[in-house]
Length: 162
Image (cartoon, rainbow, N blue to C red):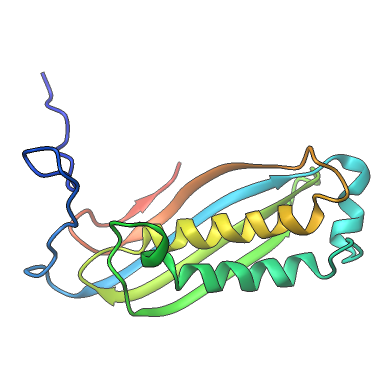
């Protein structure tokens, strides 16, 4: 029988603990996260054209994602502050033609721990910003499928979502 993985942020007594990465080597780290913002068909063109009540939805949300990525350690209590080398947030219409925006956040750095949470935070906040800037058009807009698409670096090596 396969044992469960050990929780890395919990001490023997159950207390929460930040992982000690002091003895780990600095390596190149990369993570890419994606999610989708789903819209009712009748308002999607308004969003794409930049005519939403609060203005340029895509550009403002892209910048919000970048800013949030840099603040991850302030938001996710057990994350280490990291010296980010690059952050890229892309927001684009779904290629299939469905009324949704695809949000992707890519983060890289040279550090002792990974940047998955930074990429998760960037994608999440960019999507939340899209919602905030468009909610006046329709309250049924939803954020879905937040997921790790790719990561590299560290002991676990390369991962690509299937």
